[in-house]
Length: 449
View 1 (tube, rainbow, N blue to C red):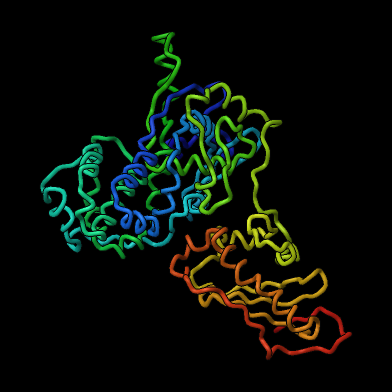
View 2: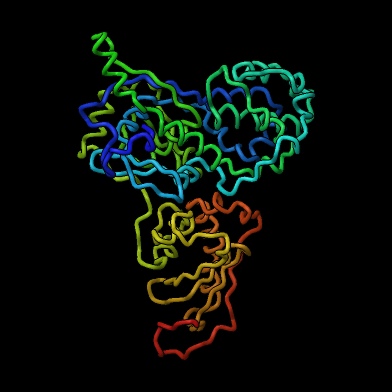
C-alpha cells in the first residue's frame, strides 16, 4: 500500500483492517541462492577468493536462502500509516501489539551494505569496454534472463582475473540487489561503471538497494484488497491474490527474523552469531509454511517474544563491558543512545563526529575516562589515580579495548554509515600520562575539563 495514495488513513492504523486481510501468493524476483551458486561454479579458485574479499563477498555464505512469501505477505498486511519523516523513508508494521520499523538503518545493519551519499557518474564519462569485449557491443539487447545464460557460458578460466571479478560483481548487483522480471534489460550503466572498480565499490549499495526494495514493499498491496473482493464476487472459487516483489527480498526476510522474536524453527533457524546479521539465519522451504499458521502466530501475543537486542543502560558503558572476559559484543550492555548515535538514528549524527567520551568503570570500583578516536583507531585513557592498580594488571585491563571497540562499531553498523573510517590497522590504547593526578584517599570521582 503506497502511503502517498492513502491520505485518509489515520496515523497509527493499519492500511488494511483485519476483516479485509486476504491470502496471497508472492513471487520474488530475487535470485540470491542461484546467483551465489553460479558465481561459485563459474569463477576460478583465485577469482572466487577475490570476490569473497570484495563488497558482496559475505553473501556467498547465503547458499540456501529460500523465499518465504507467506511470511512477507502477512507482514505487508500489517503495514501502518505513520507520520511523514523528511529525513528518511521508513515502513512500520504492527505484529500483535508490537510495532516494528524498517528503515535504511535497519537495512544496512542486516545486509552489511554501505550507506552514504551517491556520486553517480554520467553515462558519457564511462567506457564500454566490458560490453564490447564480452557481451557483443553497445547495440546488443540482453535481458536479465538471457544474462543468466550468458554468464554461465563465459570462459572465466581464460579471462583476466580482474575482468572476471568485475563481471561477477555486476551480476550480483543486477540480479540480486536490483531484482526484477526476466524480460527487463540488464542495467548497462552498472556494467559500464563496474569497469571503474574503485568507483563501483564506493557506491552506497545499501542506499541503492534500499530505494528499490522500499518502493516495492510500499506499493506491493496497493488496491489488492479491492481487487480480491471484486474477483471473489465474480468467482467464489477465487481464494488467493497474486503479486510480485522486486529488489533484495532476502534482506527483508533477514530483518523480519531479527525484528520478531520466537519464530518457529519450522520457518527459520538461527545457526550462528555473525555480522552482518543476514548470515545468522537459515530459512526453511516455503512449502512447509502456510498462511493460516503465520496469520495466527502474528496475532498471538503469547507466542511472540522480544527480539534479542542490546538493553539500554545509563549514559555510559558499565562494568559488564570490561569484566565479562570474552569480548562478545552482542552479549554486552550498551547505552542505547550511543548505539542510536553511532548507527545514524540521532539527528546529531554527522561525518564531523570524530571522538566519543565514555566514563568507564573498572571492576566496579574505579572510574576512568575513555576518549575513543574513530579516525585514528585509538583509545586514550584519562585516569586521575594511576596508582589505583599495579602497572601490569592495569595495562592488561585495557588490552580488551583494542578488540571491543572495533567490534562494537561493526556491530552497530557504524562502518556502513561511514565506510571511509574502516581500517585494517589494529586499534591501540594509550594511557595519557599528562592527566592531572589526585592523591590517594581523596575519592574516585574526578571530572576532566
